[in-house]
Amino acid sequence: MNARKAHDIWIEQCKAAQTIKTRFGVTAALKNRIEAVLSAKVIEQRRMLQTGLSKLTRFQGGARSKGAFGWGARGKVAAKYRNPDNPAETWAGRGLKPRWLAAAIKSGKKMDDFLIAAAPSSKANGRKKARKPRK
Image (cartoon, one colour):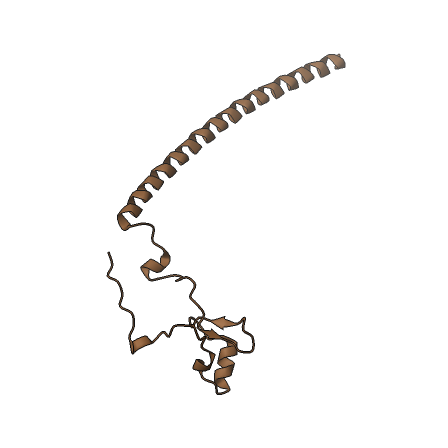
């Protein structure tokens, strides 16, 4: 009689496991369908946004960089000053003065002593460049 009960319990456990597998298979299939629908919607939204953005950039005359709006990085500029002790150290004249230049000025040298010969003077004619009008 114990063997019969054990067999019945085993059959019930197998049936329960089979229903769990079936339910899991259904939920996995449902999950896959939901993911497919969501990814299709994301792709569609991305395409719509990209076409809208391309229309906007067409009206603005192309994509604008941060520098075009007057904020952010302006890009690389040619070096204006060079350290005579170490020619690899240069400075474009933007930002803080490098330590080697600050130390040399403190010791009595002038900034003009470190100018690179081919570097254009920033104060030509004593006037600033005129800005182009915005579009």
